[in-house]
Amino acid sequence: MPEIRPVVTEYQQHRLVCSCGSSTCGELPAGVPSGQAGPRLVAFSGLLMACFRQSKRRAAQFLGMVLNQPASPAWMVLLQDRCAEAVRPAYDALAAKLPAQGVLNVDESPTREGAAKAWVWTFVADTFTLFAGRTSRAADVLDGLLGEDFAGVIHCDRAKMYWRFGRRQWCWAHLKRDFQALIDFPCRTRKRLGHALMRQTEALFGLWKRVRDGTLSRRTFRRRMQPIRETVKWLLLGGYFDGRTRGVCKELWKHREHLWTFVDVPGVEPTNNAAERALRHAVIWRKLSFGTQSAAGSRFVERMRTVIETCRRQARNAFAWLTQAVRATFSGRPAPPLLPAAS
Image (cartoon, rainbow, N blue to C red; front, side, top):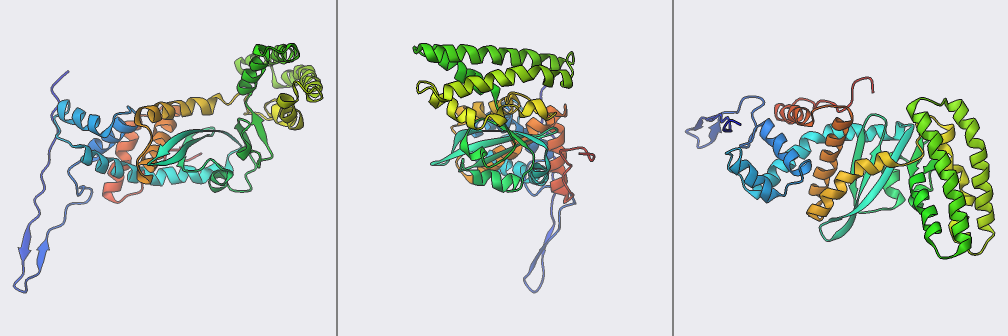
């Protein structure tokens, strides 16, 4: 590996003082940043902290030790803010597209913003992923991002803030864990119910695997799912009227239509793994950093995680896109979009 040396370009601004006492200074050429970092250094620093999960101090050490670019933790905060500002237009454009999506996989994970509790929300659409850091886990977050009239399908767990949406798909991976908990319980009645529900769950996933691989048509899939749906319905009904299993079955029985949306609506899967996978890196980052210290830090995290995950899904180079966005901001031009024009 060759020695890395930063490319330094110096701009000297001529300053004159008029006989009246006023001072006049020459202007920088268009596209030249007012600070010491160019577009590639700003973009690289942002990815170093957001994608590669380095602290401000570690990122500054990396710049000085490997790139021969002296840096301090305070300067890294400045570069972080510039990176977040460059991403803002593209992030806002994605957020504006959320209410029009037909299917959204949604999940959230706790974090910290200073001394306050906060949550990282993720919304996985067909062509992009959006993150949002909020100090609330209530339904008002969903109302603010999706609107009160969202007509698409929400793929989620059984948390109550999602219940305001009429079209939902409850995650069968969560249900499978609940059924396993019944099997592990000492009560024989719960064990029998857990084993019976687990057999139907395994049959469900067996059919879905063939749909996903293209060896089973959706029409045949819907037909072969009918006996599974009927069996699960009667198992839940029986558990609902049994005091030993009522607590588990009551909610599932009353809202059983949300178990089968994936059977009837193309594009909906039985599990919420898309949101779980997208949220995984944000959770690892939170465990390493213990959250953010301010609202500005939360904006940096949500925007950068959105860029990184969306570029990954589109097989695009996040560093190349981010460099273009920072360069456009320095030049006063619109930032490049995160989605193709057709989207």
